[in-house]
Length: 279
Length: 156
Image 1 (tube, each protein chain N blue to C red):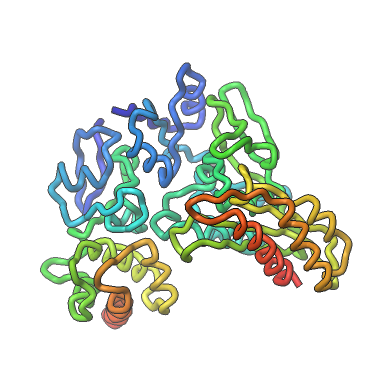
Image 2: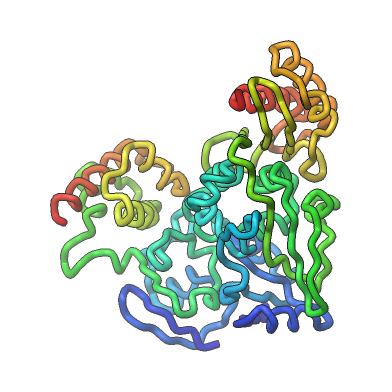
């Protein structure tokens, strides 16, 4: 039997995590409970995050947007603040799983799973997100780009809890777009997905951040493509060059969901669609 | 562990293993076998119940997670002897064939119509995208949901 802890306050949860053999934090459970069913021996103890009010809520304050780690995909999809300032994120949340999954799955779980196909990760990278991790010893903030090590692996220590996600409130002139390619609209794990956040002025790119999922061991940014586009007018020739560049920046594999060749090709196609939607 | 929550409008309090899944508690401990388990992985929606009015998969919930919540199952959607408008409409449109997915579809549809009594076809299809049907087909289900919504609007 799996032991279940149900802390009522963040402090209590952090104390539990500070112990030897700390429990596995359980957020919405849309992934973890599937794993528990398949391999019950893998988790000797779980810690529910349901009651920790400190982990909920979406707030815009002091020039930053703060999202509690236990915020569900449904809350992100429906958040007026995020729909206004970070549609790249709210639209990605709206395409995850199904109503049932979005009602339970959380942004924190999506990040901590560290899947290269985690749909919220590219938008968060494109937004320049910082993660707030807390343990009984204190807090630390880490840029999301430095968080992931490999599929399923991150720099989170077992005694740490992801408590919140922050990013600077995007300028009203910025545009963001998220594009996902899967076998069907709902319940699909992405073959490839791509998020772009950019400031385009009179058809020229002031700056652009491009993040791509399911094309490498972790979600990646495309720095060469970003540099290529920066400061230039978005002509058909430049877009064509960007497609070729981004295809060289990805290193996809062939698996049950798609082939390396297709993923590489379609990365360029998604980038083209994303860039054109910025104009 | 003592678990207390509201089930189909009535308070319930039971000793149960906290890591027992809600669907197993409903079916095995309480005999509420209207809720079905299909995939057990949150893919098919057969086990859909409402938690605080929102559609969720009961195969992806531990009993410890429903403490203090309001859970509604297919056994709790009718009022007295009157079927829920979605149930009635599904019968009339022939939206039920083998019936295995039906309780899940009814729960997802009921959650949708509670919030959006006049959904368009896209909204309906999006609301039940997490429910799989392998024999009836979706057209009659969508039609049933639209009819149920219309009746619910007329009634209120």
